[in-house]
Amino acid sequence: MLDQGVWAEVKVGGEHLKLFSEQNAQGVQASVYNVNAKNWIAPSEAVDDIEQGKDRAATHATEYLRRVGNSELPPLNWKKSRAV
Image (cartoon, rainbow, N blue to C red; front, side):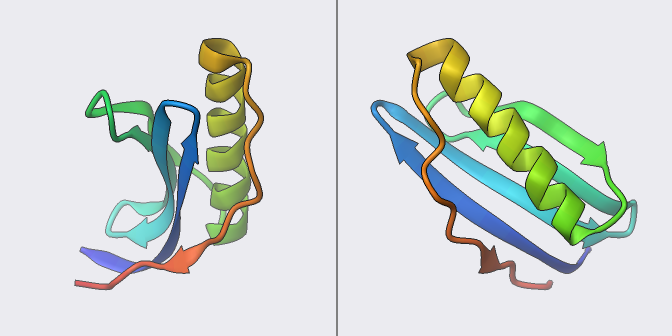
């Protein structure tokens, strides 16, 4: 169950990613999902807090975009996640 968190969406070239930094029953975690491929680029990774999770997710997304499309990560617009 989600306690609190944020997410951001990135569309660059043909890539569509969703970045997450969320606190749930397992603790605070960061992850990055590839919407087009329907798989996790960076599955849930434990972090200290939501801000660190945002940084880790952005780092994973940046590395992925550089590797697959030689693209840069645009500025992120983080939105609050809905708690269940």
